[in-house]
Image (cartoon, rainbow, N blue to C red):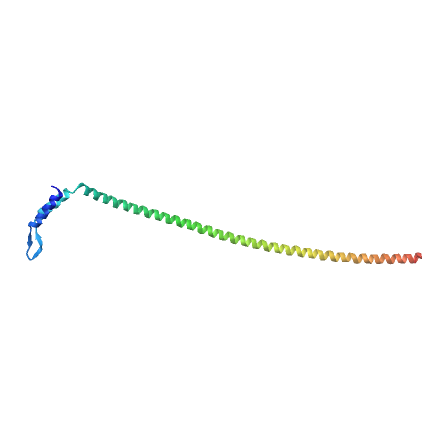
Length: 163
């Protein structure tokens, strides 16, 4: 018996059924016969319908697996992104510290150079002053020596009658 035939028989069963008193849209039918017809429908269901249910079940299973797989991929991507951001933050912090250290080193070198220049300039000034004083002393001694020598010659000339 085909499904169409079974459905026709169900239709006839309903058409032949008597109505419930005072309720015209309800009917009394043979429950046993209806159950037999329903079981016949189940037994005679087309193979394609059973395949469709199996395919639907497989699709649902595949979708669930894909969803779990997608969630896993997203979780791994988020973890990877967090690692990259963390590394980037470390690199940024390291660059900042390196720049700070370089700036401090340049400032220290500049200060050291200025201090060294000032110290050398002071030492040269001190040396120049020392040699200037010594030169002045030498000139004074030389002048005294020349004066003394000239005075000694004049006395010798006076003694010798050269004047």
